Each structure stands twice: as C-alpha cells, then as structure tokens.
Image (cartoon, rainbow, N blue to C red; front, top):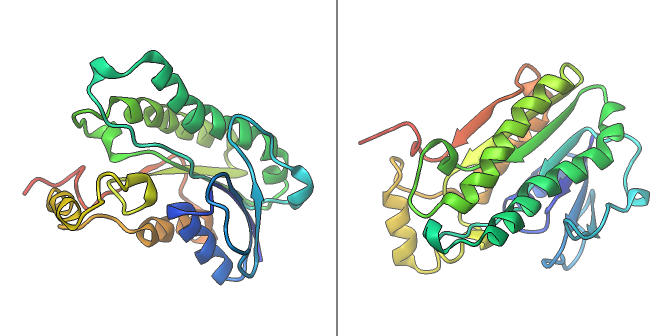
Length: 232
C-alpha cells in the first residue's frame, strides 16, 4: 500500500484518479474546495483546502507520501484583447503558484519515499496553438517548464511528469460539452472522433504514479485523441 496526495480530488479527473488508486488498495489523501464529497470512500481521506488561501493541514497527512498530483485548473476561452492582466494573474496563481506552494509544503514527505512520483497537468493547447486559448496556454506552458526543471532537480529520487489532455468531459469543460450537439462537434475535431473521459486521463496518471513507469521522468505526455500529432 502506498500513500498518494491529490490536490483537487473530489471531481472530474482528480476524483477518477482517487477512485482508481483507492481501488488498488492504496491510501489516498484528497482535497476539495467547492465540491465536497458526500462521504469518504474506502481508503480515501478528504479534507477542505482552498488553493492560494490556505496551507495544507499537515496533521492529516502521512509521514511518507509516494505520489503527488495537482489537478486544479480553469478553462477560460476568449480573444486576447478582452483578457485583462488580472485574469492572467488569477489563472497563474491557481495553476502554477498553487502547484508550487503545495508541492514545496509536502516535498519533505515525498523525499522520504523509496521513489516518489509527481504528476502535473498541461493542455494540448500549449504545443498546438488554438484560437482564444491564450489564458490557459500561458499557465500550462509554465507547468511544462516546471515539470522538466523539477524532473532534473529531483532525479533520481523523485520522478516528475505532466499529462497534456485535449477536451475531457468534466465539470470544468461543461460550457463546451453542455449539449449533445456541442459534444459531438468537439468529438469530430479529434482524429479518434471522441472527447476524453476522466477515466482515460486517470489511467495514465495512475501509471505515472506507479512503479511501472519507473524509467520515465521529465515528459509531457499528449493524451488528446490524436489531435496534436495527426491530420486526417
């Protein structure tokens, strides 16, 4: 049994990761902010935490943490000329500074593991430019740089990788998939003709957290239905 900490583990991709890890017999510690779970499933401990406003309650955490996942994000799509500098700062604080602060707080616990793993999230929009994605791409581009730098600094004790998904059917993306017509239109933009499900992303995240990926670090892995690399 291993101990995993998931920041933002009560909905969407984070919830799917928590469920899979717990089902495999691991102990999961997950945070929530607005999406409070009705109950804590077996092998899972939830605690309230607001990124940027609080520090983690270390009394709820184990002495050794084998894996860290940072899930909080946002999808704000609009023309560049309409984005205020404050909007960029708000996204950056949530998606980058929040990741840095929480990781720094639990780093001593990760260092106590035999081999720990850190998983961040980027987006297909960093390596493949899309209209109106400036705000999200700026923050996630920073996450990609952070991932590679930390992978070099933490090797060989702690591995660090990031997943770069395309559109996934979660509450975060509800404006883009709120009707069957919108969902189908977005599915058709992908070579595999479907959008992602939280479980698709969780499968890869859990692989990156496991010893099965023990020779993999510093990578940004596209999980995007072929959108970043295939043209039909």
